Length: 128
Image (tube, rainbow, N blue to C red; front, side):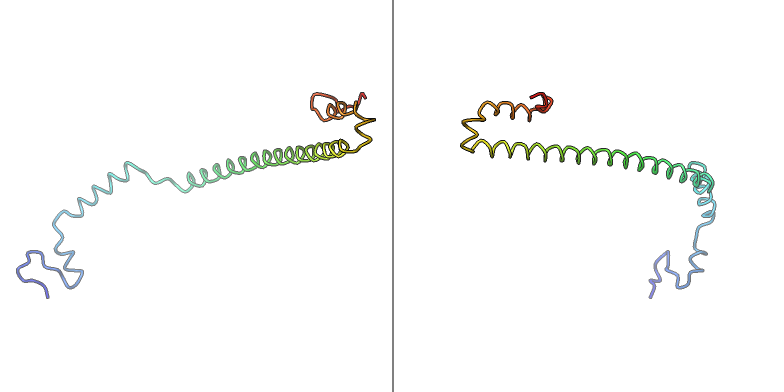
């Protein structure tokens, strides 16, 4: 039940709210809308569509560039892993020979050559 002493009584139906609106209320809203539209115009659909197409083209080019770089690095990692596997196998073979009794007596001078073959500064011992 509304308070009869309230200067702004709550209306039971919405049409009475519109009647309680002060005079010139539409003018104030129209002025605000006019200022907002003047500051930030709404772009047309063509402008938005052009911007979307341009952004899509730029993103596709970026994806292609990143894919090429990923493939390049992946290939480099695979090659380095293969080289490390070869070097590990060669080192394992050399270390296994060090404990052989005949190796110490007859192959002692070849240890330095085998080590040199593993070093990256040499040509892999191909001149021996």
